[in-house]
Image (cartoon, rainbow, N blue to C red; front, side):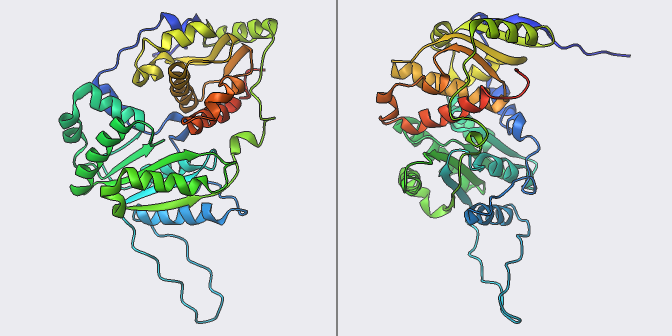
Length: 349
């Protein structure tokens, strides 16, 4: 008879120095835990936004499944002919409309032994760890490559990814990618699609853009701001969590400084085993590099669905107005959306 125990207590993120090998990176290219069971059936399309259901049906066909039968308006009217599915699909839309769910559902539905799912930063980190040629060799022969949060703001990384994807498509690999656009910027989603296709112009004919409209589901149940805890309530919440599982407790500025000495590809390992993240004395970030590293950290915390408990400034206001108006606006708005959800998660009352 064997027994398993859950680690309990308080740890400090600043004490962790995680290491990740290339083999571990490759093995980790699967959907995050919250989307481990994502299916097309579990995707709840909003009837107010027909593009959601249309995208789902196209992706079902993309994976080789049978899409729903179109409604007929006459006794003998035939369903409209559907365009052939291209080897690549790009999900274009705002925050919280279910793009990652659909991407994970596509991954699970594709009948293939070899397929990979990762964020843009995970693929570029793999290239950095094992080299470009070795990465192509490792991924070659895969039936599907899913790329979540394709980034367009780093010319060097985008060029590397474009070249790699071109080689993989030529060898028969299908591609599915997502990126984010602000939900409150009229028409900007279209510009994002154009940006994506321009950056991968040599492959643009291989991609079909699927526009997904809708409202941010993460903000439907919250007041739009990240929750702020009083020091006493923070201490009680972290103490209660650490008595039954593992929680972190750090000063916010110490976490920000520590992220500078850990490669973003290893941020997920900073969170190993945690049931809650505690950060005291949150303050507005004024340095762009620090802000971008924090965005990457928030993405990994959101992937792992770990609640955040924090004191000080609301985490939804951690990026300055200048940053929100700058070139990385899309990344910051995505992080704000996710921070609002993580600070309002159940189980930390």
